[in-house]
Image 1 (cartoon, rainbow, N blue to C red):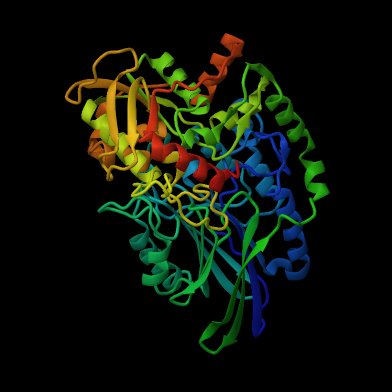
Image 2: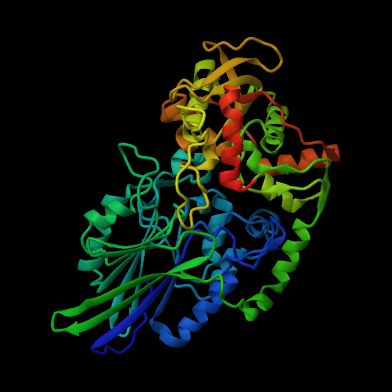
Length: 559
């Protein structure tokens, strides 16, 4: 463990700054949308430099994971320029981070990428509950010990244990992910009794509450830790992209949401007594860094990397004859997701395709299509899977999808979408009650969604789109992305009713490359694509659905 020695005064004030869920927002330019971006580590760098001028080595800088996916910036050094240092490591090293936690999207890039990234980082990567199956010890460092002016500070890392519900085992081979609450209880005891920590800081890539709950673990366990574990002074968490600043059971809990728009800042004062250091004050803030000046030294340092990434994303791959919008996918069959459906069905010859919009509100314009547009069309590095499912399971999968997406209308004046108030910093719901990346539609079959029916009874499958009859008792080949095919979003488990541990036996095909790679190949091969809605499904009854769609479209998107 790392220990930095300094003299011990009677009173010490420390400041801890956290970023989390940065998702590749390193530079003030969105390489996907090809426009300026407010959230950026180039602005965080300016803020951190000013804090270091004030606090000196009493400033501790940490990142809470999900940094290796989200922008072409990451994809380029993860999978294209693999002989170069990973840009996520270079940025953290330049900014002199003290610790990095593992996020679930960091695991998703696979051993070849994250093992290299860990080696290139100048700071330790933390994850006390990520266990190496061979050694039965943590795969990375469980915690970091820092000594500042005589105060011993422990930074304890944890990762949500829901990884196996989302990712195929080949991405996390040789590892297991232990439940957070008991892991925390054990490690806090070690930190207090063996390491003699004066201050314990949790760096947890696990949301406040909710998510997947099984008999073995909770996906989002931060609230449970704060409420049930004594001895945790500060809990810096992430994963759920929702701003949070509260003190719970004496623990200061902070989450600055995502995409480097805010940082979480904890300022702690400790006083030396005969019994040791005692915390006398803890203040938490969420600092908006979008108005900070861009760190020009930062930008100059990374000019060669940004030039290379820009050349990569500006490569023309084909043409679209029509503009298409991701927002259309919430209201019916839409060209944006139907292009993905078409690719999945063509690539695998499956009977049915599932997919969801992965970006809430984006568009790809008519005219030249560039590599950057592929990151709008398909945000994550998911593979393509084919699973065996019965007709009844297919309908169950869709029922749960639409139950999370669509309201049960009691009158013509009701909302058709299942809406909720927007939560600051939450870019995964954006006015919907549930995660939009779980709003699966289907292709290959014709069906209607009756918004007047109760949950579990909305979807009526009419036939296959080629005219074949659809039989709920027959077995079919169903294509979807790897996140869904591993149980992500629980549509296969809670919707289709497939036991989670039997999902691997249902998988008939797994692609070698990511979905975006095959979409790029399709566009390059065809040259010009005419985006079109398949029009194989719609909301009914029309008299209620059509006016409600227009109302909710305007409420959500202003158009």
